[in-house]
Length: 144
Image (cartoon, rainbow, N blue to C red; front, side):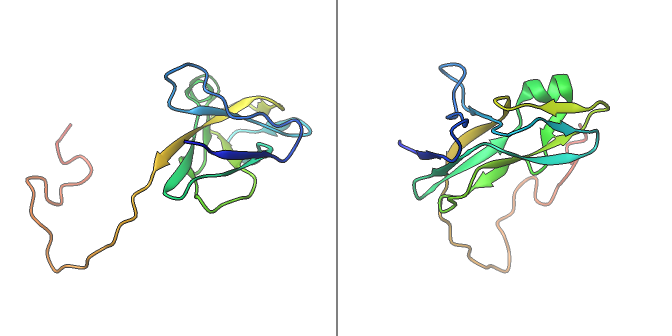
């Protein structure tokens, strides 16, 4: 599958897989100056690129586990979704869940992007749903 990518800034990085079997493509900050992300605050971080996904696909922007574990940095609307018809710059809403300032630098790997196939569904309104063993058992229904 091909995904067209357009660099909007000469400093932008093309998303990269860090290992052969990685599911996600790391995406990088493309910013003119460092961004100080203080505790319990967020910032919209530019990546410097836009993409054109094939119809029937989406891209999900997800946190990087290393940033989460070592710096308590996540993505506020995780996962963020890029639709096939969106052509604007890909940006990431980073959130500092930690207790110390975190500095985002140009070229830093800030998130990962996963490409998924999307099924087009038609919803059918019914009066009753087929029953299951679980039925409406929700959060904690297994007592574990």
